[in-house]
Image (cartoon, rainbow, N blue to C red; front, top):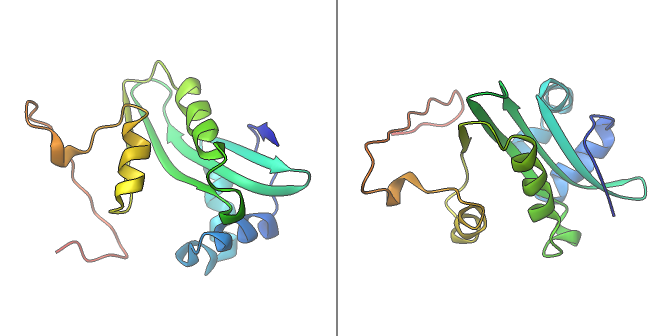
Length: 142
């Protein structure tokens, strides 16, 4: 396995990875997915030969905010520490950035994973007056 921090990824490689985890909302518009990855501030990938098996990408101003947009590992390679390595790489690259933010599905495994890296779920915060606001164009948040 090799970790790379470049954007040298084909549309086909992206589609194979995103399809392997069932992220169909991304793969319905392959060129938009490709553009989103290319426009990301930071992309780190994991490869087995020429097969893309993991990817994390985010957006940042490298001072005050790092937003982790996607982190995914091909279903055949999950549980091998690849996700941890990808997220560690992202966090190390942005270690001096004040805010590190992500939005994730309502899944206890994901909560435990992100909490192991120091992320806190806003639902659990009691001592801080912190709020987050979301607006999605594709999901009714009511």
